[in-house]
Length: 212
Image 1: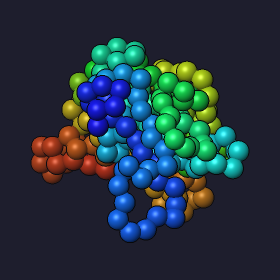
Image 2: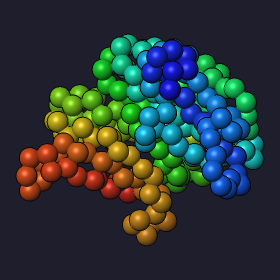
Image 3: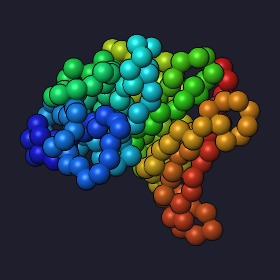
Image 4: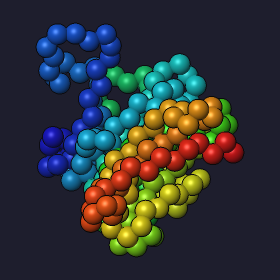
């Protein structure tokens, strides 16, 4: 989608109920990025985390992995608060999470993490598959607890989960509810470069809610 320029990307919101054949031209809202090449809204980088700010409206959590605001392809993620309607822009987002280093692709994935730390507030998880804190292309997931406003960076995350070298952890990312049965919301992290029974067999890691 060429919106703010070539490969800027866009996210369309369709307000329910929906039925029959529809076009994106029928969308109730359209969110566009500030710059060309941001790749806003790629697969796996659009999440509905519920009502983050408690105003009764659902909100959006959107990734733009090739956003260059903090460095070339450092990436970014945005919280857009509801109600959503008409033409909207990430420049007006209530919260921006910026990648902390060029080439890390923060915002490749964005997920609603439920109440991961069990404090009563919804949490956010954002993937950075080329983050290299655990080795080249190890990847990482950044967790933000109950924050919905302001400008922050990956370095401000409340928790960081890193893969091992070449795992590309966070290539896929999803909040999966309470799969462990302990009453806490959990997170699934895809790492297609992980070595199992064979090289690059891939793996999915389950991270159970921590309750603190």
